[in-house]
Image: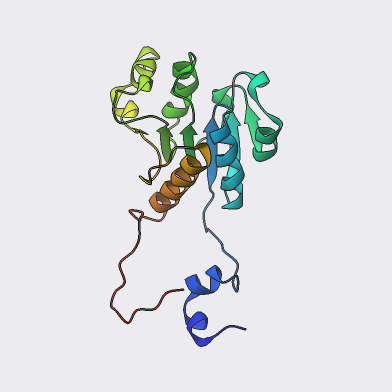
Length: 188
């Protein structure tokens, strides 16, 4: 049964399962490298309405779980259709092939692109991309670190922070807890 508040608040009705959620836009999540983080990102991303893709040049690294979570698997990053609907997350910054794998994705200018890593040191993607001839203005589009700052450590926590950050960015929000308009404000 829908109460009067839900009849006038579509967001609340969607949250209660009374109306279907329609993101209204094409959404694709591409994880680069078959890691435990990538598997969780792709699985949860699909639950959130993303079409999912995995880029992994080494087919032997792709687990059954990663194959099940990805709608598409690419061994060549140049084969990935990237556009204003695509979010790319690089899940391993220690790979020797980082430059050649990341460069075509950066050049394709996805909606959002980021790479795992700590803010305590310079990301290896910078030198790797420069080595591939990627201009500094495109290198600057690569976000690092990825995700909301929730103190995440384990792959599922990092996936949660990353997906929450992507959704906040897509929705034009900063992320975090909203402040009520007044003490009498109600929530869904």
